[in-house]
Length: 132
Image 1 (cartoon, rainbow, N blue to C red):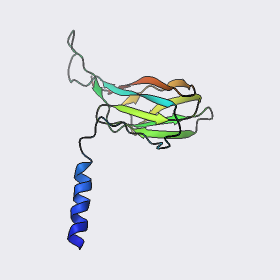
Image 2: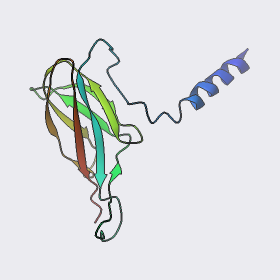
Image 3: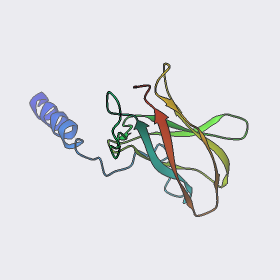
Image 4: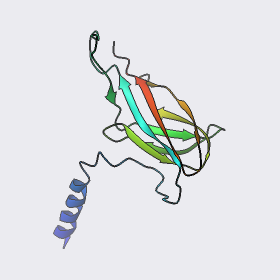
């Protein structure tokens, strides 16, 4: 009996890999039809001097993106996927979007968003990797 349970556990664990197209969404309330969606990018992502025409930007995966209300209270959050994508469902209102970073780098900009009813605001958050 316990072998079946272990096999089922292994199957569930393995089947979760490769889902980079699914956005990480912390608020699973499907009745909320508005929020913020976007990408988190980090640069430079190449060591050494950057050459003309060379793009040194990479997605910031597993970043904790937080949505703060006007009082500065975190009302929701999501973790970015392998491509740096995130989706946070939230009711209409004015919010601040930030990446919660432990340590000095990467340093990420925060951005203000106004979410309207039945609308997802699109945003890109850029982070400085500190690489020079």
